[in-house]
Length: 141
Image (cartoon, rainbow, N blue to C red; front, side, top):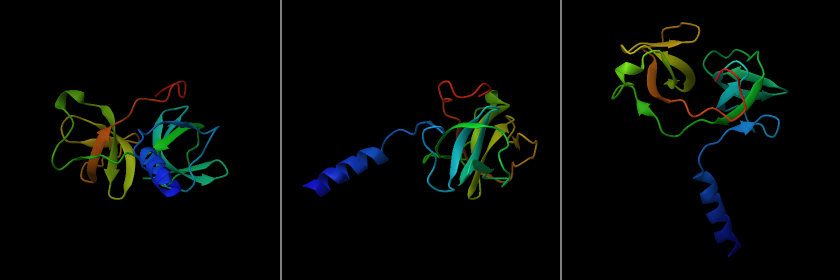
């Protein structure tokens, strides 16, 4: 009976909607890629311990304060099958580039550029809209 109850709880936990977690309360248990909110905006990074977050795509340290994090989504749109609407040019999206992820702006003409203006159009395999920002978390998100 206890095993059945545990399985029910685990199933409900795994089906929960992704949410933002304040870093002051909890941190990821490993170095997996997470969507992070910082005082300057959003990024995709893994937590390496001792306050160190490394960008998933560039493998650089995040130099600004990380305020919140959330799990990466399970559902993605194939860039080969569908692109964002043309009228949403220069809108930021969460994108997959091979096994890594980053945030890129879509330019409405099939082009994807990272915030550092690196053209990753030929590398983007999947995309999805960014989620709602965390409440009270960042100033520029």
